[in-house]
Amino acid sequence: MPKPRAKASEPWTPESWKTRLEAHQVVYDDRDAVQRAVNKLQALPPLVTSWEIERLRSHIAEAQAGKRFLLQGGDCAETLADCQPDIIANKLKILLQMSLVLVHGIKKPVIRVGRFAGQYAKPRSSPMEKGKGPDGADVELPSYFGDLVNKAEFSADARRANPDNMVAGYQHAAMTINFIRSLVDGGFADLHHPEYWNLGFLEHADLPDALRDDYRKMTTELAEALKFMEALGETGIDELTRTEFFCSHEGLNLLYESAQTRRVPRRAGYFDLTTHLPWIGERTRQLEGAHVEFFRGVRNPVGVKVGPNADPGEVVQLVETLNPDDESGKMILINRFGATHVAEALPPVIEAIKASGRTVLWVCDPMHGNGVTTDGGVKTRNFDAILQEVEENLKAHRAAGTVLGGVHFELTGDDVTECVGGAAGVREQDLCLNYQTPCDPRLNYQQSLELALRLAGWMSEDRK
Image 1: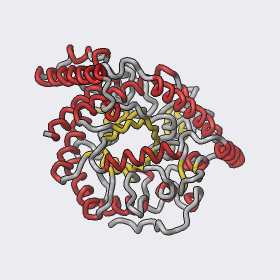
Image 2: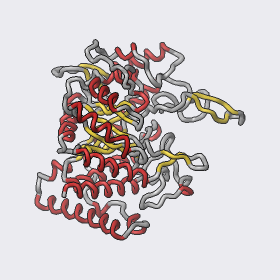
Image 3: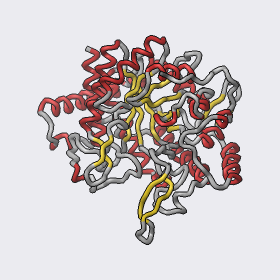
Image 4: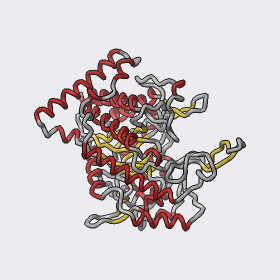
């Protein structure tokens, strides 16, 4: 049975969450230092603007009506050290290229949302981690909760929760957003030209001939269509391919989020100005918890991750609590069931939301339910399982008469070897070649582009 839901009518402030139980709470040993960091964040300019947030809400409302599609992707956990131009540009490039493939396949504008400029905090299944100390002895230290909290290095000093990291996270997020805006405004010359993309892996991949031909045909058609529109000087294509980008991260550290939450002139309500699109994770979506309490009061669109054990009635209560007036553009349900569970677990949730009459954007996260560990202890994900979960989502929505409105991937624009499978041919024995992630495995450039090609093909078939 679902638990009693939080009362949305109760008074809300940016700090009312402090009266609730906070899952995955960060424990700091210097409260004065915490307050100094929070005061500093409150005094700094916002990272995003309220009008950008409202614009994203209008786009999400159109996606809820089936007129747009959301593509959300990026690192499992950003690191401050990765605030470098090449790394940021590569992530932006693969997301933009994936979005163009989707635009061509589904003939709808794509909302581009990056998991960056703030994805510095991560929940962990255990607050403590065992490892080897400098002398080789077994040591237990706090887990790595992302650079917003502590450091990945396995040492007592690095794993201490440091409130100054929140200010450092803000600074690096600001630099990332500034660079992204510069790239978007200046334009990437090759992004609208698939003939310049790194597609050589398709020629040598172990793919069925028919599928390889489909990929070739799709990229050729996309290149020709874009060239044709450019030659005509046609402005109509701009609505489909306009380079507009939004940022997102998991709203895990509520000290960080609330410090940048404020009212703005000539707009009603409060805005969390650390990001355009925050989301609540599967581990922190308790109805009576601090995270639901905080995010029910902000004007931002809010995503909620839902796993295979979610009670459909409780999911409805979450939606009602976070969006009591059923405003369009506000609620995103991100299911992360796993390839073996989605066919059974997703339909009851869809039917419960349909019966409630609530408006949500249905998004598939095929990454988090498909993690496996090799015999050698390496965390990875299988490309085929990721594909299967996306396809099962499409089938479930087709059967229910609803629409899959978006996808949520952990990916990078670099040639890492963290997920196995795909046309790039990454095998389990290849994981050691370039395994870079400090947390969960990500799709590399080639796997990400192949996934977009496959999804575009499926959704193109649905339009026929």
